[in-house]
Image 1 (tube, each protein chain N blue to C red):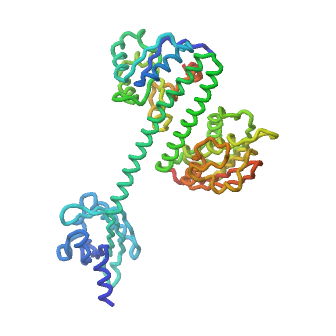
Image 2 (cartoon, each protein chain N blue to C red):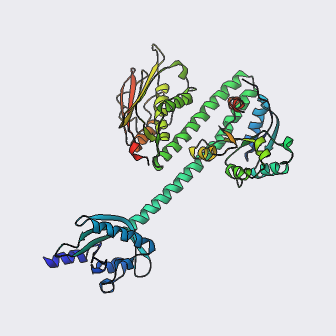
Image 3 (cartoon, each protein chain N blue to C red):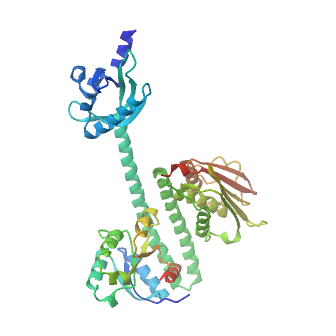
Length: 354
Length: 134
């Protein structure tokens, strides 16, 4: 039995170490040779501090004094640089427990798990994400700039011409260019949502709503729709403003886009209420509704559930992802030719602010 | 509303098409009498430098693009800080960019000489709005 345990420890991919109360190494598993190059003989009797550089010594001393202060309890420190025999280093995660008063062990037991590979992969991932973000930022600008020039030229051509046929063509060009512009915007919003961290700030819902309605007032037929707002804010609510605006914008813009005007007085009811835990945003319309055949797919990437859809099919996908990122949920109920109702619940990040 | 007459403006943009569009919109709307066009941040700075003691020759408004090679909008603003106060008091800066990225806007908004941020293309409405804050 004893042999079995010994074999288990010696062949472990972790380094097991026992320190005495002066932090001298009294035992180290032979796996140390494989991972760090040091031998059992060369380490026993030395203090553990010889395995760390200047910064590492600070961290490990602090960690060990915490471990000593809580006998019998497992303590963990992530990401410590430990020196190898040839002068390079490995990154380890250490779990330690103070068993100085245990009659059999009489020491502090350390389990050092080599996380160098994982850490390197993580760093590569961070770099790749950073590059990708810069790329999207640059690419979207370079796609957008010439498009904005075209928009400017169309505006100018309209200013300089009185010909109504020409105006009609220019308006059609405008519409195409605007939809490409909106698509580029969707792409950047999406990519930024995926990669950027959440920034919790106090949210002024009335302002968010007002800005969103202001942005959308030039949409086709927007002026024919009655918009009823009810905003009930009782507590300070914290969340990520950019993502929140994206969600509100997309839901309202959809409600405007998919409206019915025949035999109908179109309306959109927007209600926002908050409490200490969450905010509930409901956008409800009496528009064209969603076919039950499509309702499970409306949040899919590039899915367009309506014959009249002229967007890219990214809007609700972006909404779903933004809601997810904020730790919330979204539900839809809809009846074809009656209307739709989207309910978003997002948590108050009041505890995330420093 | 008080009708503000802008005497002279300077356009700073590396894109000649955009300079043409902005110049023409300003002409057609009669927003300003004189329009100085510079197609690089560097040549705009040189213009300010050589006229820094001749305030009459300086524009009342500078429409500044952000994304330009070498001296971009940020570098321009950094260099602009070093001009004497009379120059900075006279020439107010409006950012005119195709970017609507929060990152760019946040970096600019802190600058005390920048009075507005307009997303391209420059429109009649944007110029009307601009008049109200001059």
